[in-house]
Length: 634
Image (cartoon, rainbow, N blue to C red; front, side, top):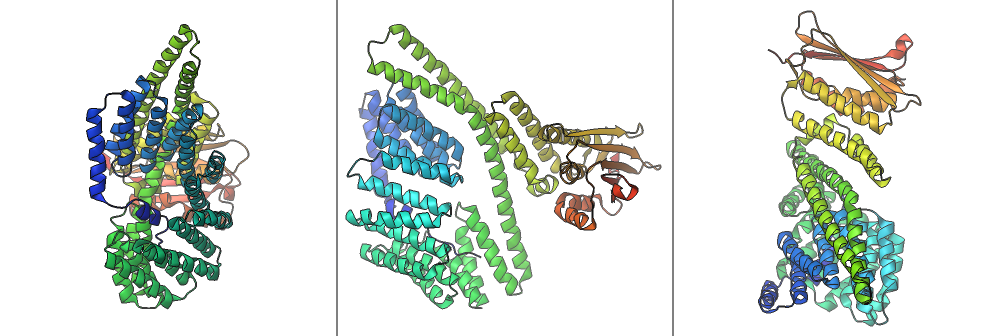
């Protein structure tokens, strides 16, 4: 179990106040201005302002205004507004969790700002893209963005320096570079004191405290929390005081000082109640549930967890919700309420599986985005050419005409590329499947290894092979999704899916695998119906545990025939791999293959699976015999 922090959410509540009246007035002022202005540059700027504003909470309106601004900027060659539009698109895609798409937009905006030597724009883009790189786990690139941004700062730009340093330190902490985070935060506190920026001082003290806690230097962390608490009181900020108490409570839990932790959590909750700041109450209730469990007050712990879970169910952070269910399940288990504990563990598993599905869909979308990045770079090259033309008026009219032609052509290809990405995204959204069966039938490592193979082809500019692999892989995924929800399918369809899977593995293993399928004449594949995806788990085990470890080429042979009474389909699947080798490995394999276990259950009492190590007869490999009841034989 782990303590749920306010963490970086504190920045949001202190920097973006929820003054709805002021926000509505701001939007109305821009709308009124749009009706009055006539110059394209003014209209583009106002649409960009609205796009940036709506990006925080309404992606549809944000995208609408930003695309209007981008069209105006391209039509009238408004370089700065075009860069601002790309920056907004990066913000919008980042909020939608399409991080690679956001990074591509940021890179485009940065190149445009660089071409016009707009250092303010360059710094803003580096700050934004640094956060995105850190979010996707590319810490080295993200940190490099912050370091580069500091080189563009001018003397006296302390506010920009502090903004960069804050996000830089957050990135270091997220990447578990705790010592570097502490060093940078201590180095930056002086600048925050110089500008009398109490909020940033508090932020750095919290970063130091939480990093020290992660390094098991809890006593030193408490000293930093005390400094942060003093600043929060000086600022007269209830939100900050509540956040500091909540985070410090987590450190006290780690030190097993549960009574003190309980005191901090209850004080944090009381502050929220007093000032009606309820946005993060659920985090505190979850933490109270954890600490009261440690104190042995299980009834009270359950009550806290139930309140906290109701709040966490409203959050968009699915990981926090899954953690909440798991922590509550542990308490119900201790209290002897096994049914409730089991129900909550199932909910946690379902959420984590859905997160896995979304990540897989996003990875597919981002692979295609990388494939299209070259077109964005071509558009940028044409844009830079147009800028150069404006600076040197003596360029020939012919060159100017060619540049405009290139801009139009590349703009067309960029539009077509975006349409293809949208079509691919819509296609992947159809993967709203019975995911439990998918994970049981197909090893996630196969999915990710296939994605990596596709990415490798594109990275090596082998687009034809990459597209071929992606096409086969996509068809395989679609067939698995379609068939996994059907109670029974034709044997011919089952064999087609198996062949497609084996073809994908054959490409991925660079022809190290070969296979053959033989079927007796009395097997009517277009009439016999069998449970879906019944053979793939066995073929997968043969490849992963038998053929992949071999140094030489391997083969899978599959034979199908009917029994004498035509009541059962008899299938023999064998490989010439390394074999089970030992009872220990056989035990390990049987536990690793959830697909095989589920297959046994799906065949029912009449079905039978026999696994035989051919080493016993002096041969290499494994032989699997399946006896499958015929579901329907018209």
